[in-house]
Image (tube, rainbow over all chains, first blue to last red; front, side):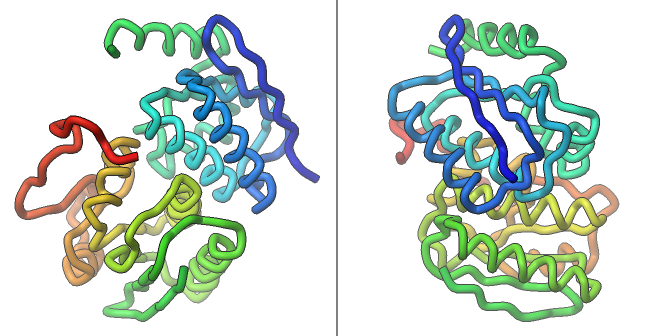
Length: 122
Length: 140
């Protein structure tokens, strides 16, 4: 059992859609990280991780998302979450990761939020 | 990466030695140790990074995963003795808003042993350090 990850690009934003429970197995984490490393290496800056098909994540899954977040931030990019379930939002709030990882109600809101950073960044 | 662990005043201290690259087996060992200690009742953890020259993105994920499991059970995990390179990573990623970071292990232990009413993340340095934003080109 694993997660399925689909990537597509829209209006300069990479949309990474995850389906399945994110339990952050070593293999899934490595694969997910490799995906982000290659996108970052291609010069992609803006990412939405779409969690519409992700009911739940454990702590290792949160670590997996934060690894991707770290790679993107180190390259000067930005990554936000969209369509997180209440359970995932609770997880981020309890761990206080909501201080760094912004969560949006829809893909549209997430993309708007990323576009609005254009004016503040060089 | 090597783990060395001890306990001081009921607080679990985990020293990480070597590069924290967070690959599968190292991450699992770290996570297992934290889970085991929580099963035995520990809720307060200090992760000492003084002997960790650097940590990559997966290493950050490893720390965040452990932090998540500890906070999910009402506990707290703080960092100590981070090198300036590690602190730069924490600042660039803004994770210093999530983790409390202390100059020394003993300060971290003291903090967890007598936590203030509002436990704040961020750097707990006596003297402010130069911000990474002040530098021309951040380290890759």
